[in-house]
Image 1 (cartoon, rainbow, N blue to C red):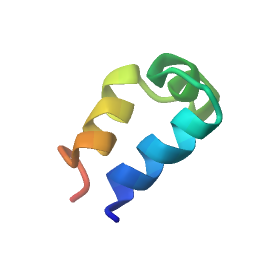
Image 2 (cartoon, rainbow, N blue to C red):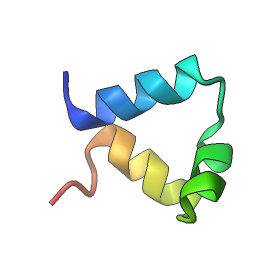
Image 3 (spheres, rainbow, N blue to C red):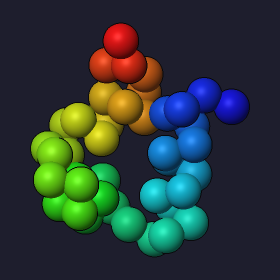
Image 4 (tube, rainbow, N blue to C red):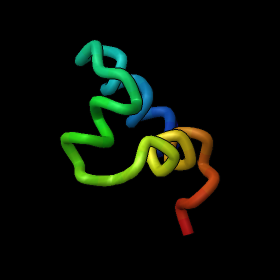
Length: 42
């Protein structure tokens, strides 16, 4: 399981949208999306 898959799974288990998680982490919703798709894990 990749980091993005873990973030996605835990976010869904917590019943949070990408926007809600982003707000809690003080990042953009686009960042959450990129993390989940592996777009910015460098």
